[in-house]
Length: 398
Image (cartoon, rainbow, N blue to C red):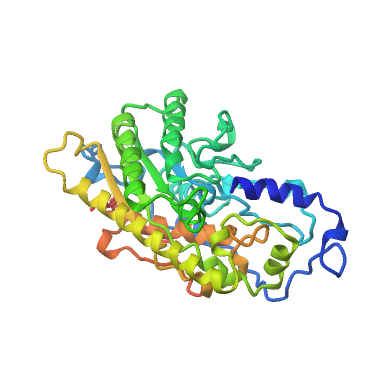
């Protein structure tokens, strides 16, 4: 990720002579369909209001969405909204302004007005929710040991601790940022306010599957590091629900983009893409993509193991103030069936804004379902509809 960002900046400065024949512009293909924006915010605003509770909840297992005062996020470039807005014009070299984290429209943490995001959906029922990111800024790069301090921009990031390039080994540091910011914000009662933290991490770890210099963590190490993250949250952040979002198979981006003229044109220029293991061509590529898929499957299984073990603990002291739940909503995604315009045209890798919208709706709907009834896929051919909730609806932690 960090290597890609540097490469993209350098490549953007190349002269048009370095481009393929046809001049200084890669022609956008006619096959990029225009995906209309979701109407989720209009639908949710038309839902009936929730009546006030007769009495406040006494346990984490009885929380309505309007009981939460704080929302926060942990993860990598997807949660940071990397390149989500895409290019205004498909032309290369890129303007430097194209290289951004569009945090205000990121699916789980965006708060830009009118953006279809989880926080903006929640605002129907809890207009005072605190923590959503707003706006755009140059990427914050944190990739393993390459993680310079003082990159966060709290005025934009708010309680979105995700950093582009982050590995599972970086998430504990993101928790430190959240704790500091939660304690700093005067509008947050750190000890008493209920908090929802969305956590999704593993894409960059899986993307290292074919590299010898910095190999992917073995599932045992991934599990160990994730347990450390969860323990840090449990011990340092009171009254919290952690929503662990399982990952989709990142390697499928190859299936979606490798025959697309725009995306293949970018690769022919010589850009180093974020996930080289996914983009090896020919006989080399198939086994590396399979290895990535196996890693994601194993990581997801370890996440399920952690969640199930915590939920099975008997007599734990924080049973009324801490809960962890798991969202499998992306595990069945078949990227090869998506229209290519749901992928950012800046790098042909990250989700575009319309994809973030469907991801946000999926997370919202699944929050209110028991695990056995959660959906496991986002299929743009049949866009998800946002669900209204009622007085009996609870954020499910079973």
